[in-house]
Amino acid sequence: MERFKSAADALVERFHTADPFALCGFLDVELLELPLPARIRGFYASPLGVPIVYLNSGLSDPKERAAVCAHELGHALLHTGYNSFFLKQSTDFVTARYEREADLFAGFLLLDRQTLADCRANGWTVEQVSRYTALPPRVVEQCLRERGPV
Image (cartoon, rainbow, N blue to C red; front, side, top):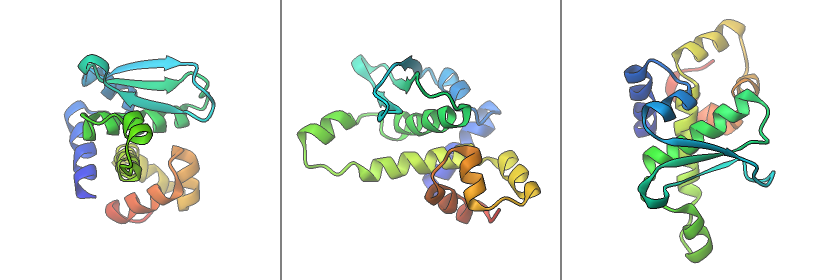
């Protein structure tokens, strides 16, 4: 878990932002918004070695868009050489671990020091932080255990 926290913290320190959209730009990860089926909020791929985060253009909530972008950026940074579509369709390889890792990276990125300070100042519960960040409650809980309680 420390690996994901360190990766997120290092990006925030280096680029002075936790905004996953800005980070994609700084890291030369292309961001494409496309109309995707509703069940697909986003995905990461690197055709011809070009890292691309695909985001469903139907996502209207800015917090959800940021959470999905952060998750997919996590794949771009942590799972560069993996093709999840191939793994899911053509192998018996379990991809749940990679999804959890991308979730944790997104959690540590979006629950940066300033966001946590805001949440603490408001006295928010895990569920309220989850709604505010659009991160799953289990991710919020895991990240808060590492960063300290709300």
